[in-house]
Image 1 (spheres, rainbow, N blue to C red):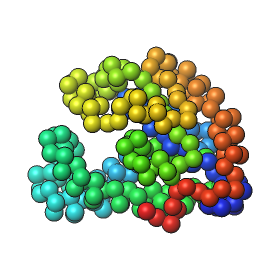
Image 2 (cartoon, helix red, strand yellow):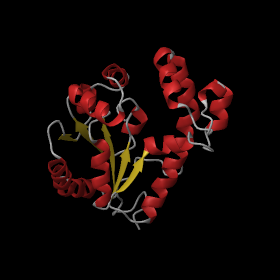
Image 3 (cartoon, rainbow, N blue to C red):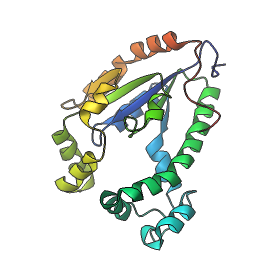
Image 4 (cartoon, helix red, strand yellow):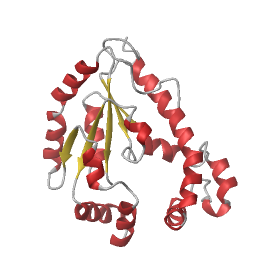
Length: 225
């Protein structure tokens, strides 16, 4: 059994990249190749969805104006608030992050029970969060130029260039992401088949890295955070 201390424990891989980088496509391919992918952003969306565990505290902290008629977090309104009020971001994170941590730990335990060889933590804010960097064995960054990010996000979301640039401005810089990477996929001009091929080519290095950490303790606290 690949438990937190066994010789065949999985490799814990942190995956990150800026908005529009193609990180989600890379995560999907890793999952198709057998990795367990734990998506921190998807978990955050679930706890702020209608009936989500974060919603009572969000309503109490921010008021009904930040809750949609369906009972979910009004993401557009909150995004505008966070841009103008840094304290709002801290208050929101204080509500959401512990709940995301609990669910992430639960999914990690489930992945360990399935005996997977690689657990991928898809974490948009991996660079900004020092504790996340300490909880993975290796880091994979999906990279592209900022102009490419803007064009991709505009095409898929309908946001204006200015709105996308504001999102990019509050994320880690490209240089900061590259500085913590063990592997980088340059997805600035790749076709989808070429991107898939790049992920496939990482399988041998990932297994070599897994062998290198065999027998060492898991850096992630599977009991919870």
